[in-house]
View (cartoon, rainbow, N blue to C red):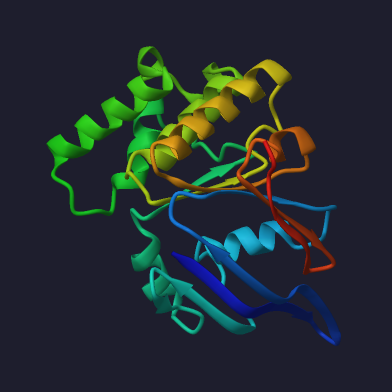
Length: 226
């Protein structure tokens, strides 16, 4: 489903050059659950951004559903990822001037769905994540766990094939964190391809495969033994 070949990402600022990813080779099958681990600054979030078509590589190739998108424009990438990729971030990234329902509905705002279908999907996503009773509330009126559930609802409302999660439990206590992990496992079990960046060995062990990065390179790529 997704394949990277000799993919590199280099950032330049004046005469300073920083290699965030160095000739990465990676394949991710449909329905897989991949955890990306490694120390801070090793390239985890950069790799997630490239997988999610939020950034472009400096060199190499990236096949997304069979198409090499490495040289595509931002406009073309935006069109490709719309509705096909969902994102869950550590910081939730909810807009506080919008209600829960409106935040979730943002993911469908620029699609081609009819208004009635958008409303139905938002309702289904809120019901699935247990936040229907908070539909009219603002994010600031919610607990951290509730905010992350809203963020997951927003990520899945378009029914994406690929879900990317960047430290999804980083701002949560252990109880709420485990609830979020349970929800992510359920989504993966239903067929959603899940790629998660995490510092937690415990959470990484819940994936089917772990990719460990060090200094922008793949140090370990191994299946998780149950």
